[in-house]
Amino acid sequence: MQSLTADNIIVFFLSLGLLLGVARVLGELAQRFHQPAVLGELLAGVILGPTVLGSLAPEAGAFLFPQEGPNAIALNTITTLAVVLFLLVAGMEVDLSIISKQGKVAPRVSISGIVLPFLIGLAAAWIAPQALGRDLDADPLIFSLFLATALSISALPVIAKTLMDLDLYRSDFGMIIVSAAVFDDLVGWIIFAIILGLINSAANHSNHILMTIVLTLAFAGIMLTLGRWLIHRLLPFLQAYTRWPGGVLSFALVLALLGAAFTEWIGIHAIFGSFLVGVAVGDSPHLRERTRVIIDQFVSFFFAPVFFASIGLKVNFLTHFDLTLVVTVLLIACVCKLAGGTLGARWGGMPKRESWAVGFAMNSRGAIEIVLGLLALQAGIIRDRLFVALVIMAIVTSMMSGPAIRLILRLGKKRTLLDAISSKLFTRELQAFSSSMAIHELSAMACEASGLNTGEVEAAVWEREEILPTGIGNGVALPHARIGGISKPIVAVGISGMGIDFDAPDDKLAHVIFLILTPVDAPDTQLEITAELAKLFRGYGMTERVLKIKSYTEFLALVKSSTVEANPA
Image (tube, rainbow, N blue to C red; front, top):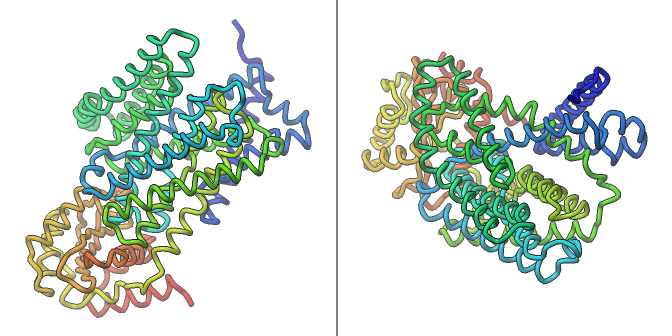
């Protein structure tokens, strides 16, 4: 039986440690410059791969990262496991319930954002295949379907991270985008799974191809219905009778590996199985946010950097860089996705400025695009030139998303927290001990000061709270709603000494609750106040200072002084 020798093991751990270390350092540097970590992780692979190290010191590159042999197999095994777990995390970020709760806007953004790019990509690949990098021996239909899928999909993890960085994730604007991206992810991966099934069955008869497609759709349907139901029933049992969070972590990882094995067996890639398992696990209300964060960090700080860095080991980005192809792919990708997202938002009734911001958000391709490209490269659908173009397109679209949203949404006059609070909208001792009671108490206070109907306001805020809890962490919660009949924002502030559970990402109770009511015809106002509060309470220290105040005057003084500190001249 062949096994790794001592020398093989030494080289394997040396190369893995080097790959992870450089990827983490460059990933952190990328985030310091407000760019996605995947940019730095990819750059690590480019530096350690044939592009830089392989060109400057080919013997060292071949020693550390051989293309064949036991060490290559071992590293490939680790990277395969890494991408399977990465897709588990990506799937857990999908919340199916928010699609139906967002009304007509999110479905229309999603439909337009998928259909328009898909049709444009399909037509472009069919009409001008050589200009888009198709090899002469590639199947025209499969290539066209792949490119159409690659152009229509959005990167939910990158979109979510961008919205979090802009403090917009838990706003109505953020939920519309996330809802649309959820649907994009599901449809895109199902289509791509079918494409992989067509590839793997190409040498067989048509009934085998049909069987692969049927099994793919059946597995997706079962996991998203019966699978979700079973997981929903099992999670409380695991939380009650196993050690938390270890029992749930093990359960999720075991299911992901079993799902990956099944989808690999039916002829599509293993990542599709782990992705659907992630969707089923993450959609359960019994999965605490803290558990989700632990799984995300477990994968994001080891497996994901190794996988994305390993991509740079596979291709020489300099020798396979084709400027014409890169520009062509980038232009088509941006135009069709921007048009699809923006038109969908306008179709759903969103204002013009927010619609453009939605288009730029949905234009993020990020890590998901790179995964698709790598699988297509490994399956022989595309070659190195187009893969390099897709990677560059994914990076550029992800980099431009955040700055574009920030620029578009902040063109008008900015409303601040100080415009919306008053002594009549402040209570030092909130009596509530649950999120619903807190919303009721603050709604009543806001309505008494403004003359609004308490029942209508409370119902609107609670409906939004059920879509996604508004605890932002650091002891703060921001329940909110857009209300008709007001011309300016109203913010009711309540302080709770004992704390109230708003299901925050850090699992801490909320001690400072801001009930934010904004006019229906001023959609930017909610985003501006939410972003201001998130920035003001970035650390738990601000919450501790608020808990020590004894009056509205002290609270107002603290907010004003802290706002100056957070926004120095």
